[in-house]
Amino acid sequence: MDENLVKDQLGRTLTLPHRPQRIVSLVPSQTELLFDLGLGDRVVGITKFCIHPERWFRTKTRIGGTKSVNLKKIIQCQPDLIIANKEENTESDINKLSEKYPIWISDIKSLESALEMIRDVGFITDSNVESVEIEKEVRSRFDKLSNNKKAKKVLYLIWKDPFMAAGRDTFINEMLQFTGFENAISSTESRYPSLSVDNVNKLNPELILLSSEPFPFKGKHTEEVKKLFPDIPVIEVDGERFSWYGSGLLKSPYYFEKLKSEVQEKFA
Image (cartoon, rainbow, N blue to C red; front, side):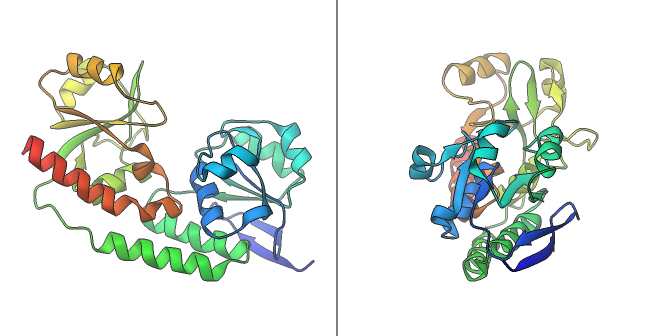
């Protein structure tokens, strides 16, 4: 089998099959990309959080969670390529799997690094044509986003008990900017800082965004947050649109435009 000497987004050099036939994905947004690249039966294992596409979620072998992979199930899949992510997967799992299998690791903090990942995954899976088309269309849709002259300062919460927010050095932070928002977190010391109620009040955001993931904010949770911060508007947002960095980015610009319109209408 022909082989490629490639580098992943951590700068690691690894040898991969020219056309891998048994791929395991440890990242939901990258699993969605593999589907949109048309890889079909070549993907043999996904995580329990890889919910898109639904038919893959129902039929593919599930190898545990992103941070708790089942090594025995991965061995049973006999992969010739594992696709992972620096942030979403644990270093200990990656180290164990690297002893047996080639692992390509992404590191996403911006739209540009996401587009690079799409191109690279297309190359290593021999689906260049499809990946280039996806990259071009994502870039085109983001380029058409309208700009807000005055950005509203927002706090994007991803967890509760304790509250945790998306900080500056994150992919979510850049997506907030594309939406026309300014991140209330100004420090770069922590990517996902924990916050007390007093911390949130001191940040004085104009709007609190409650993400649908990783903590599933909805219903009663939203009402609890509203009671804690009665003077700050609170809304729920689709976490996939802010944090999924694969082909799902095709949907994000439309969602951002719609969200901006809703916010301007309700909280002008």
